[in-house]
Length: 303
Image (cartoon, rainbow, N blue to C red; front, side, top):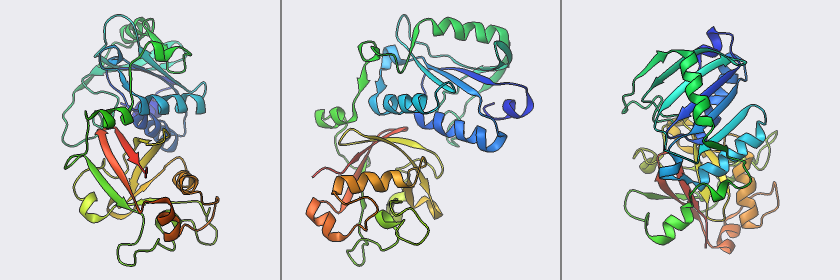
């Protein structure tokens, strides 16, 4: 439904109305379309339940990032007036001509598509009627880059939730990821924050190691499934579990994103080896990760 129409039909646009959606799903879907089909159709996404449920600020920040990065190829809208929209409608078109459409229960999220513990049902529907419905919903929506969008949407900031006690640290909703080797107590020579410290690599490449006692718990999404994380200093990053058994958190946009970020926090020059003394001077040898919801996490490296 999300890939085959681009292979089997002459289409150049996918219009989506979804009650809930995640920026990580949009990012991964866009990349998989290009990798599997060699095409880059325009994706026009409208999130319908925003008037009732609001939206995570971390998700909003990354929706804005994607629309800015893939200008003219990605539009993300939020319903802001009238009733909330719980419908899920997907319409593939060529120009203004609808070609094939689907509707049913699956939200535009990783759990809506592909989770083994979730049953969804989708059916092909009349494409003309589906596109007419989408255009009607568009009239009560605004683009995520709309200059006054913050006056129209309630954004939930992960930092505020944690401080207010709505999502306080408790067993099961947070983990600590070590930045040093648990046997030597030192930073790894060619892994972790120093993954790129080898010939022919960008020296800023880095990942966060996930101990086996954590990756076996299901705290993080399945291997290969992207998710958004907000940081304690207000940044937003995209992560994905990778490597054998999903034992590492990578930044899929570039493996240097995390390394540059951590060096900035530690006041270590770009490309330089990160030592245990750098961490001790900063005051942390681990990173705390909170799970806000199935698509959103919070990365705390504060001291």
